[in-house]
Length: 141
Image (tube, rainbow, N blue to C red; front, top):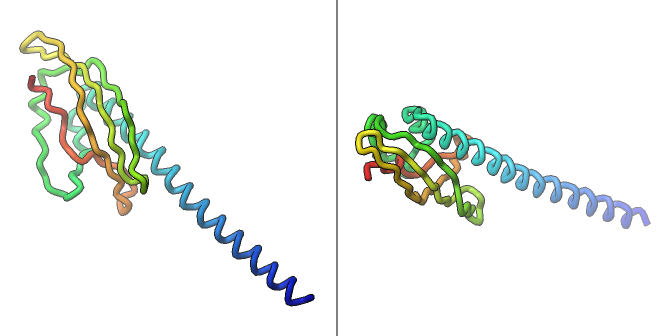
């Protein structure tokens, strides 16, 4: 009788530990999803309000190569709208593919344009933050 009680106790302890660890993994993904929403919003705001230098802080190629456009090229551009569409997380939850819908006004040309830009964001576990694997949008059209 005593052996059955010990076996059941061990079983319940193992179940509790399993649930605890699986809950931590879910919580980590939840935190990552919260962090990407903050990153997407802050990147969008930086571009929307013309803080292009600040926006570059969200950009890091996944292979760590530096290929950024000089943000000064955007000095004659005013972004009038910036929205995200079609968010798709990878199965692991550490990558997000999204489409950015951008409307902008080119001061020199006096034109308003709309573009859709596919973006890939990735989570850097060491830095505990999300980065855009790409560059500033090409608004030279």
